[in-house]
Image (cartoon, rainbow over all chains, first blue to last red):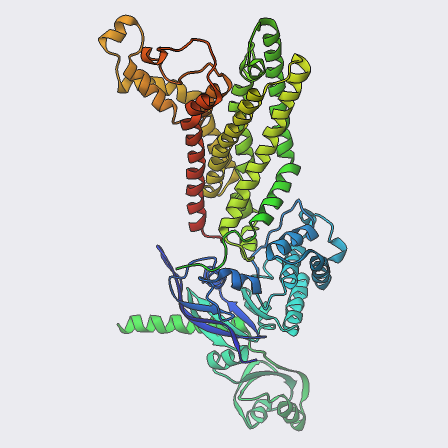
Length: 319
Length: 320
């Protein structure tokens, strides 16, 4: 599992107006789901296009499956599937005809074509509408058809650009499930999104983009520890006398905030929920709610850039 | 930096797909009917004219193409006017259409180069035009057989086939123009309007402008003013300017091929008439020699325009 299928070193794309991608380096291991996250215009799509050899690299190198996409784009594109942002199909053709065209471009033999297309359509649950024109498809169905194309291609790496963009919550949840099952089938998935919270649950590791650079990279808990100062925030709702003191006495708790009457927020270096429950009960209090806050990427992202902006401001004042 | 792999990979697939799109599209059907109906009208006029006037003509069949009976123009001048319309209709949304449907980046992420996509679209357009022209040609021959009752002789068939090839080259020029605009302009409507504007300009306005410009560049001298005719220099300039338009090149080469009596496309000099028997047809090879520069000019223009479009497409960003 440690083999890297994508490796970028100092990858840069410069336009006349400035850097779209500014010396980024990252590696994606086989079989993981790697998220390129960040606001629109941060350089995610440009990075993806460079990995496919669809746009020029100004500086640096990128290797996909050990090959240089600038020099051997056909070899790379044969083994990598790409689902562009707001993917389009030929509306006057049926779903199956669209896939047949791609299969022909891939040079899949005619007798194999049919089974592979049917399997792929079944995988994304589009088999019943396979012979309907794509013009009648909803956004979510097109997105799934795009995924079917990647599955038919039997790609080793699936690159998905904003796959849940514009989907309703249910459709995007279904799509994320499909992405998880891709991973279960051994496909490496690279996905980009500006919706941090929605995709953080499927990503093994993420890279946060900001203005053409990777600001942060790692697993979500790692980033949370790094940026949010680490630790857990446990919320306790309980009625009772002197609970704040009791809760503060739990080993590992570094502070207790009284957020509201009978609502406390504990900062701890581990999940102290069992101890908190015990402490409340021990003090004769009535425990109503106990929850631990999952570190959210949105919080990480906002905190990181707030801190950075504050530091920059501080530096300016100092100057 | 050298790229690995063949730029032609996937070319055949693209050609077949585009060809089937063209042949089944409503747009194509409308254009075909437009051409067939107008061509029939002019052909009918020509047949009436031929029946009325011809006594002894070794090339009576070729007259079908060139003879006009007012108010309709001749078959070839109708084609000269309508072929561009058809070619533009097939090519104006070739690349920007893919952009707007957001299919371009998906197709280019398959193992093909952009070369295959652009060339495939061009060849499919050209094949569609060839199919239409050949069927139109067969219709003309068939109708001629039925209504004139005279079979064409070998040379007539050869000449009309050469006409077919030149017409295809002419269609190629306009297809390349339309595809160039489809690369340059993101909106298909803009590309279509500009291509159609260029077509109308070159077909209708340029001949008038060319003679006016020739007058400016080479003003008539005293001799020509006294004779009331343009001087040789003015004529040469006018011809050179007119030949910038593919429509004019097409018309000139068609005259040389389909009217075997044509001896030259420019002014006739006395020295050229020495020993010539006026009104006798030239052999096929000699007619071909007259039309050769024009035909080559059309083919060269096609290649040049395609290459410009190709370079622009290679440099374009694929992202929408």
